[in-house]
Figure 1 (tube, chains in turn cyan, brown):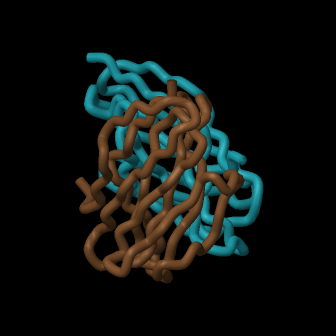
Figure 2 (tube, chains in turn cyan, purple):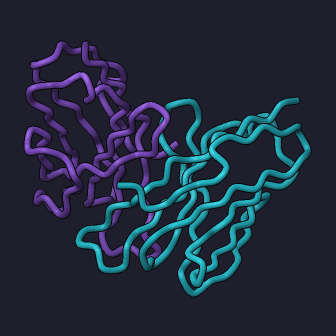
Length: 113
Length: 114
């Protein structure tokens, strides 16, 4: 079953614009992570935010976390054509045996030049 | 790129056949997780191996089985293949109890069942 649900499912923007993707999840978490996937290849870890953090930055990425609303957002500023990919949020439940990640369905971002 | 490798890259099998997919974990990692990603969906957790033992399993039938070897590499075996098994299979390695926890993914094996 999916834990996180990303919104929107697809997003098309021009180079230089900002892209915002949202993720909602269902159960309590230790942390939330965002991954990127280029055209059906492996996933690349982008950023992790812990449950006691509200905001985190990494280069052009800004992630927020609202545990009261069980939601997170990923902002990519000054987007580039190379940012074209699918983006997934993933959670690791705090009481889960093992350390599996539970992924949402993803947001497909298309950046045109 | 991560240090996680998978083989083969692509595979075509017939319904009812069996398949073995392989994964070499990143150096220093003792945990391997396997995921199935259907087209247009997010990865779904199949199972995880830690120190050669299964350490958690998702909602997949017993015909999905695995192994982890002393060097922490891993295999995913699927018996009696069905058309719905067509997907990208991803493995990810990690260090159990690492803080913060992060998984490193391989490039995946694309399995097509006809």
